[in-house]
Amino acid sequence: MVNPIEHSRTKEAAKKYKVEPYVIAADIYGANNLLGRGGWTWYTGSSSWFCKAGLEDILGLKVEAGMLKIEPCISSKWESYSIRYRYKTSIYNINVKNPEGKCTGENQKFYFNGKEIEEKQIKLEDNGAINEIEVIL
Image (tube, rainbow, N blue to C red; front, top):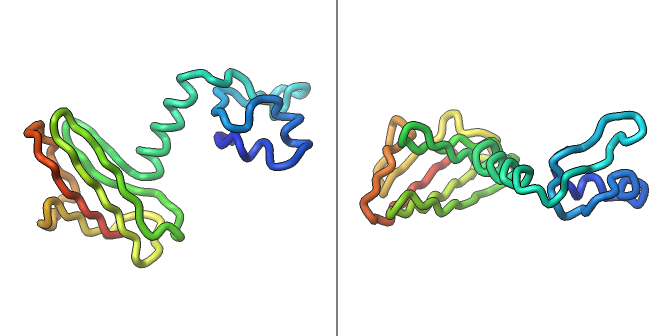
């Protein structure tokens, strides 16, 4: 329901949706006469929630209490992805590899600057360093 392109795959669907198929809508109406129609497009709140959902719930980038962890929920068809995360003056280059075609990382390996981290999370530091994180699902 969130992805606007899903509402415009056919001419009939686009006529029902009635808003731009390339912009996140804040609302998809459910009332009988408006069922399936989009609303509140170009609304910054809807795009920021979409970005948050993508980064946190799909790519799994979690930052809580100064700790960074990666808990992806991806398609088994994804072979890899990368994130460049900036924390104050530090950079964290995150590379996630999925050689076995998994959807989540329950038994993942987590490496920080070449060293395996059993806790599968690191404390973020503001030290101007460029850090490498590798996660293998």
